[in-house]
Image (cartoon, one colour):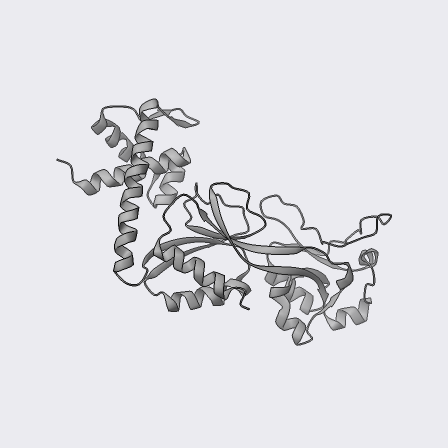
Length: 299
């Protein structure tokens, strides 16, 4: 008789392949090679005596037997997960690996994550920082931190807090180039821009304008894909930048940056935690959700 753990690993690999429709993607999530995934699936098919996938050079798809086996496999793994959850609740502190995707806002999240590690030393954080729009389920993340509204019905969400965007510059820059009084004045300034990694487009500055006013033309003096570069360049007098308030609170309070055009700025952004819905929330994920909910935007 085959060892139960060997059969269990086959279920896990099969479900991951079925959900990602790719041996390569499944291997990436599971931390093994695509060839190892293929061999595991082949052994499972040999044991069951049926084909689970239709394979071609471009794609794989479930057979009718595979669809039935997927339904049963998910049920089995859900029962195991529920049992682990019940046992872990009686075993003390949350523990285990937690795979998290976060945006490139280290000034906001790094202190909170460091405090989380101190509070929960038995949870292993696997952190992936990117502004790319990841697929939470297909890429195997337990939870992601993102801005914007929830658009995937497969995910549960918790709002962490709100932020405002401000146009800022250093006092010496504003003395040299003048203070813009209305959005049209930005045409005569150096502007430091952010480019979205997933689209390659520049982030628009949310400036209110009157119906008869044209959209302000913003010169492009520098483009990057993170916050820290724009904060640094703005503080060193290289131009104006549109930045979230949480990234520049200290610089504004200490006078290293000044905000301009406040009366024309509109719109509020939100941070959310997103995780797969329809599953038991493990103690380590629950601890992470509650900790960030209380610490990222306190008060």
